[in-house]
Amino acid sequence: MNTSIPDPIRHAATLVSPDAPDALEKRIKQDVFASIARIKPDYTRDADFDTDVMSGTFFETLSAPLQGIAIARTEGVLAFYNRVGWRESFLEAPLESCVPEAGLEPLRERYHARNLHDLAYVHPKHFEKMLGKAEAAALWERLKRFAGQTS
Image 1 (cartoon, one colour):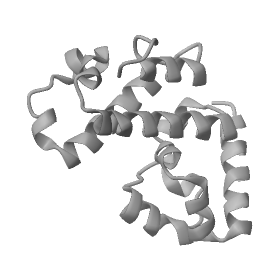
Image 2 (image 1 turned 60 degrees about the vertical axis):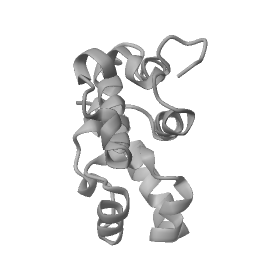
Image 3 (image 1 turned 90 degrees about the vertical axis):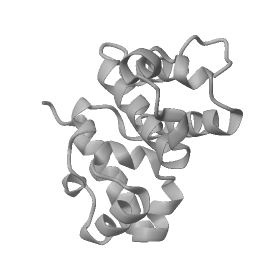
């Protein structure tokens, strides 16, 4: 990614979790890498995750449209955690922790969501379409309460 920030994904993870960005950075990079692998498997076949992806050099070599995937995912993460707050357990907490039954299947099927962090990649308007305005608003409140819980 040609920007003035050496590694924009690392920078975003640090903005969300200033004291411990490593787990979030790794998760975002895993998710972006997996997305690119689904679209262009040849681009990821020879990449070493620990060396190429975690250093950020993998993303720098991508075409602009593929870099766009990384940018969109990272922006989604920033917007999501700015809205609900950060808690590391989002990375592993199952969808059922906050998502109503009506939203589970569409999130799993359409968005490949497995846990609460994956909700960061879903545009807020899609929650309203899936759940209706009232239930979408309730979901955001449950996510804020989840983020506010102590570990």
